Image 1 (tube, rainbow, N blue to C red):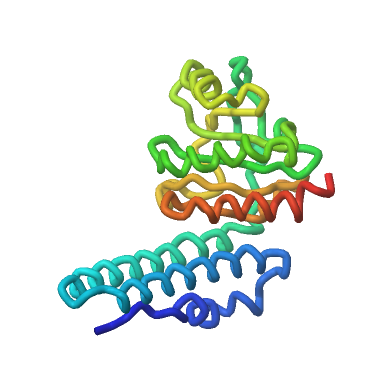
Image 2: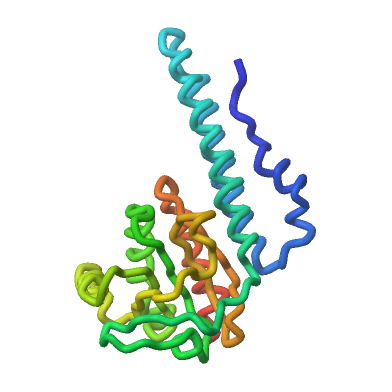
Length: 231
């Protein structure tokens, strides 16, 4: 019987040499995620040990599937956020405002650090709901002027409907008219969060997972402490 591998996240990090090369300000986020994965694996081990013999085969099968999912989550989501950190947003992108005007990147991302939430159309709806909830829960700490939501709405009516349905009338919401934002959609069709400064450089990149909403909560806690507490 092959039990879940408790040290997989650390071995993967060592193999990728991320801890040695990582900006020290990003280590708490990654460490938090690794600890979360370890706790989940320990829980699976406990379930296996306490299960009766009659359903042990089913339990082991479920645990293996969960362990594989955790590995894939760690590889595809956590590592991706570091892949797109330190990118630069194209300053010539064009956006549609709720007032039917158009504006460029530099017209909406200037001044203080901004928290950007971008999601492609028809992407993970539960992920979008998780992020919007956390934005609204933390808006007073981050600042309404420091949050920007971007998507690709089919028309101005859909943009207005999204704002009204989600109670985001006091937050800047735009529709992307250009073909691509930071992450290539043909490669990763996923919602994501990041912070950008006046140079349009990305940092604190984060990809949510609908099965682990607590990671999104922790992400906002770290942002409040490390980024927006000084503004």
